[in-house]
Image 1: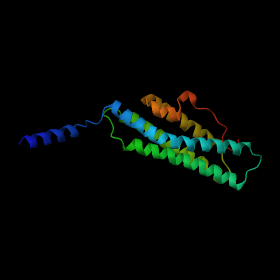
Image 2: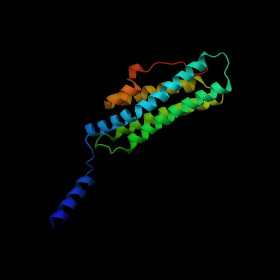
Image 3: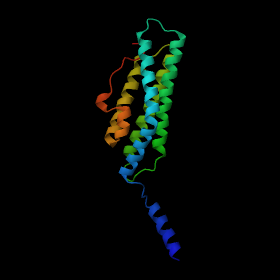
Image 4: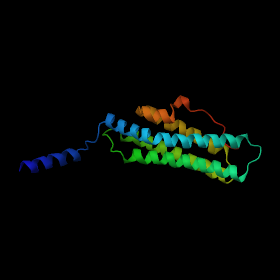
Length: 170
């Protein structure tokens, strides 16, 4: 009988939506960045270097375009992997809207990398694509800052840290 009462109490507790505390969720979200950040950071840096090299060239070779597009795509994949890991975390009660904003910002940043990669691969990157990438990176940094994710902020920067790199083709 006491086992049945214990099971019922457990079920009722879980049904009331008692997820992790916000501090526990933050620790888990930061752990995602601690685990995935070095790999993602390498991809972000490689994409930035490739874009800079493309911008420094008077003419673009197919190899340069392919390399840059690949680096941008890899950065988008790395970002999507982090977002997927954040999405898999059990959410604390009362913070779903804030976490949704983070997930949306991360997905948008990943999509912006893909969009720029598509433009580069086609040999016609646009300033609009580059601007969107900067804007989504800034918005992601804002969401990370608002949630107090310190390890993630290390990898993605604070909103003030987001520079305005020259988009490919500008």
